[in-house]
Amino acid sequence: MTILVTGGAGFIGSNFVLDWLAQSAEPVVNLDALTYAGNLQNLAALQGKPAHVFVKGDIGDRALLDSLLATHRPRAVVHFAAESHVDRSIHGPGAFMKTNVEGTFTLLEAVRQHWAALDGDTKTAFRFHHVSTDEVYGSLAPDAPAFTETHPYEPNSPYSASKAASDHLVRAWHHTYGLPVVTTNCSNNYGPFHFPEKLIPLMIVNALAGKPLPVYGDGQQIRDWLYVGDHCSGIRAVLAGGRLGETYNIGGWNEKANLDIVKTVCALLDELQPSAAGPYARLITYVTDRPGHDRRYAIDARKIERELGWRPAETFETGIRKTVQWYLSHGDWVANVQSGGYKDWVAANYAAR
Ligand code: NAD
Ligand code: TYD
Image 1 (cartoon, rainbow, N blue to C red):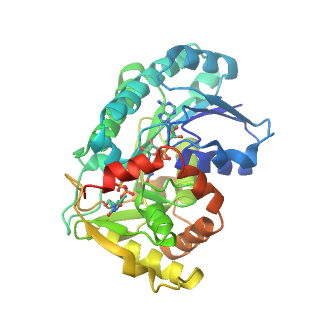
Image 2: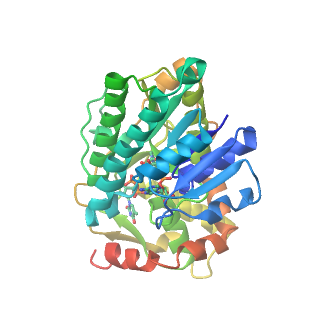
């Protein structure tokens, strides 16, 4: 038995592959295009382990997909590969349509052909697990109930629109062709290997470098934050026991305003690596808001708990402490991801704010 993971060199995908192989002998074929967000250093601990087969390639490459599926005959596909950053989707939506929409379509077609040729128990047990986001549901009013799985889709950014489109494709491939799919819609993740274009790692690396901590608008936008290891355990639970064609929301029961997140990161750094120049919160800088910025996301994660017994293991306090400690002890990883095109992105996103 083998599983095929797409996007397994990115933030969540690499955490998933590492966790999977720490808990199971079942091999992983890891297909990743190694865009700016993909990093083989995340998988360095797996070097020389035959249970991890890395393949550099694009989910839009049908011939490659056909050959991987025929060679490895996976019993499941777990689909993480995507363009994932909202700000980048505002600067350049094309890559999001190409990978998230067209790439998911190409993958679904290849998997459908593979699955159709299976028989017996192998066919019945096959799964396509689509990893998606709570951002497809749009923005919540301050007092509105959290997103359930039946909340209408109201995506507001090019990123969330492209993920919503991919969710709809996955749904349609189940209803029309019977492809055995499950979809998870998760809230904001944080943890090791998080690329420092996203809020939490950006704040950690900027603070340590004595650079401004850019808070968009008034900093009162609310997100639900989940430790990445908990997202990975939620995916494993749904892959193993989720009902076919169903979607499951995964969240941390942890709504926080961005400014509170930034202040928490600063306080932890003050404790763990104090700066001679004074408290890190002195670096907080309010900058122009993100266009179309969603005000609040919140996840109702009762379905996955009721049906599959999943709940997050980390609290925000334990998860954020682990995360800050991880960044403090992985300066080489940070330096590596900040080389190359990273500086161009920082200039493009922040110079004019
Ligand atoms: P990421 O940007 O860190 O990683 C994406 C990975 O996909 C990278 O390794 C990249 O090289 C690879 N990739 C991109 N385009 C590809 C292509 N065309 N073919 C093959 N590989 C390609 O993203 P992430 O934060 O790890 O997110 C993973 C998935 O989880 C995404 O589908 C995202 O929408 C979803 N998600 C993310 C979050 C979050 O907070 N980060 C929350 C909920 C859902
Ligand atoms: P981000 O990590 O980009 O995730 P998402 O947009 O998918 O939720 O951003 C999290 C929140 O932090 C979001 O409300 C935007 C805000 N933010 C800032 O205030 N400053 C920043 O420099 C970044 C990257 C994000």
